[in-house]
Amino acid sequence: MNILVINGPNLNMLGIREPDIYGNSDYNCLCDMIKNKAENLNVSVEIFQSNHEGYLVDKIQEAFGKIDGIIINPGAFTHTSIAIADALDAVKIPYVEVHISDVSKREKFRQISFIRNSALKTIMGRGLEGYTDALEFLVKENCK
Ligand code: DQA
Image (cartoon, rainbow, N blue to C red; front, side, top):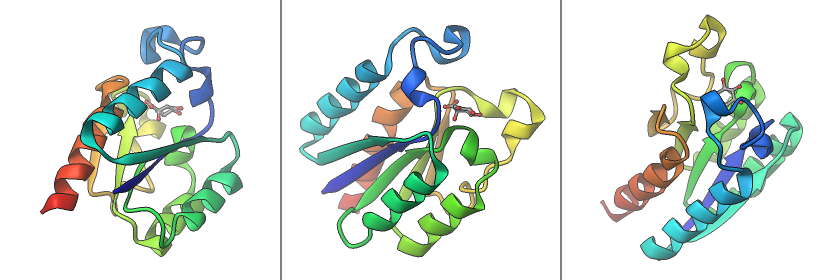
């Protein structure tokens, strides 16, 4: 099974950005956690981060025909990007929406998600473990 993890803007600033909300671990730490979990689950994983909406759309399109499941945290683009939602609908790859913080308990503008409707599942407020939860979930779904 091939899984792609996509992170949007400012997630490369983990450990520096608002540690009270996003924690003290940095982006490399997140990548290591994901890689370790993928190894344990015996699946192959690629991790991608960009601050640019179009690059995220390109990455989703490139996954077509190659990737079995996507884990995506589009960062602030969650609340604004119809282009990312359209790309996910276009490739029809099952995906999990992940947010480190519990966006349902934050500002009103963070309650909107353009990608939630088509997501298999949304995980929020679990910190970095949300990503490893999502990996486990996708692997179980794939075995059904
Ligand atoms: C986030 C929540 C978003 O509202 C925010 O813009 C982010 C990170 C999260 O992981 O909690 O950049 O997606």
